Image (tube, rainbow, N blue to C red; front, side, top):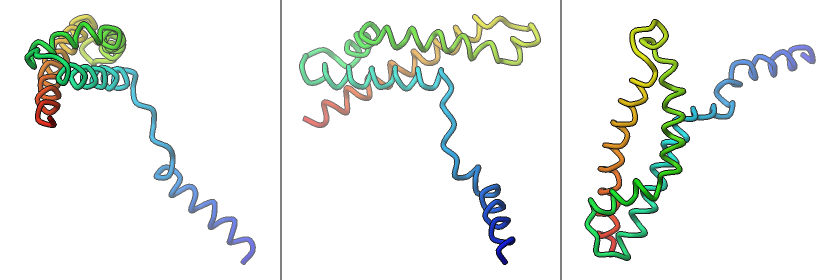
Length: 124
């Protein structure tokens, strides 16, 4: 019985270990994207309450106000682009993927920020 207990503990840890392990770290691009989104939400909340600017104007201002965060996202996007299959086999360059990724993200950011402004207005 004494020999079976350590074996049972080891077996349990081997089976449950992966499920109990800490979450893996997010890729750099995901961290950078979360940082940009948080910055845009903060910018939207701040200026929606303190100016008469439209939601679109605030969204445009957020791009300038969150430039540092966006620069970090662009750097991470280039690194992520280098892992794409088409880049690996030479069909496309990483800058092509980076450019498309950033264009899609900027389009989403604009909508995200306008939505954040409208929600902030609704809370008045």
